[in-house]
Structure formats: C-alpha cells, structure tokens
Image 1: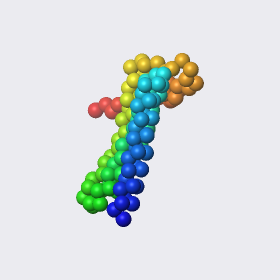
Image 2: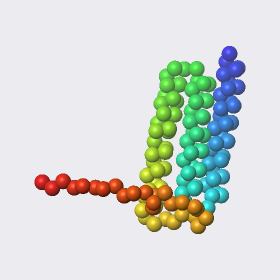
Image 3: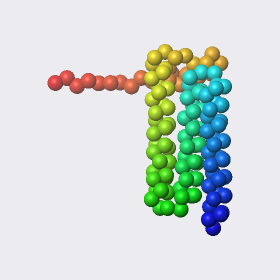
Image 4: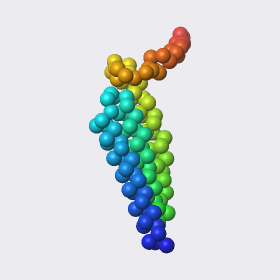
Length: 119
C-alpha cells in the first residue's frame, strides 16, 4: 500500500511540476501583463495545489495532510482574487492591453454608483 501511495504522490508531483512549468513558460512567452498574470495565476495555482495534494497523499499523517489540504483551500480562495485585483489595479494605472486583444472587459463594465452618506 505504501508503494502505491508513493507512486500516486510521484505522479501528482510530476503533474504539479508540469503546471508550474506551463506557468513559467507563460510568463516568458505571453505578450502583455494581463495574459502573463492569467497564466501565472491559473497554472501556478493548480501546480501548487497538486503538489500539496501529493504531500497529503505521501505523508500518511493526518496532521500534515490536514495542513496540506488547508493550503490547497487557501490557494484556491486567494490566488484568483489577488490576480483579479492586480489586473484591475494595472488597468487603472494605465497598462494597455496587447494590440491584438479583442475585448477590454474592464473598460466596458458599467461603473458602480457610490453614494456617500452625509451626516
């Protein structure tokens, strides 16, 4: 049983490393800030999560597995939010899209109405 879990963990580590490799290639090859950020956040998050799942499988210790799965949940909750907020901040700062981008969703989004209360 231990040998089988070691093989499963090894396969998961290789899959996680592949996702991380794709994220790093995306950082080097994609044309603008937004597509690079997309590659890094999506593939990097999946790579990190799969490696943490491999740790949970291989450790065979409930405390370590619980911490690893808590790390997976943390990555899945925080990485998309932080990438979204960084993209909004970059757009507000004036970073342009790649000239071949077909749509600027942030520029076309309706602006929220902010009401201030006067006391």
